[in-house]
Length: 112
Image (cartoon, rainbow, N blue to C red; front, side):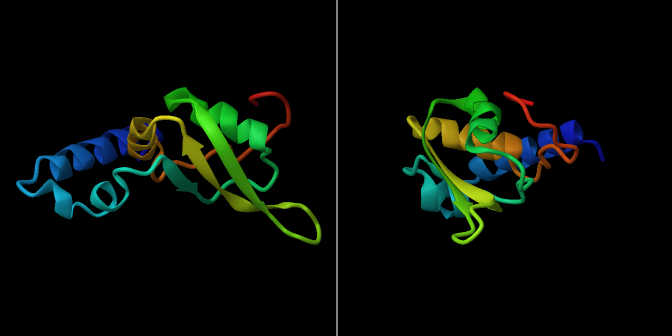
């Protein structure tokens, strides 16, 4: 299954969940509906904060990023936390990036 098909299926599933009679029982929508923060895991270790911002800013303005790094080496641990200015950006990001792999073949440079 290609990435675009997977995104479409995820979007359709999210739409079905939101149409449920009691939308408050939808797990992430209910628990985090007021939060502008998201967790991003499975990142290539070589990505910088700038690279991550380039990728994720397409859905809204990022006001804070915490790329978790090893205390001794300073190298990325492959996950981060992002905070958007507007919580609606969080929903768009989760719907469009959930399950997507970012850059298996990484080359450094501004935004790729």
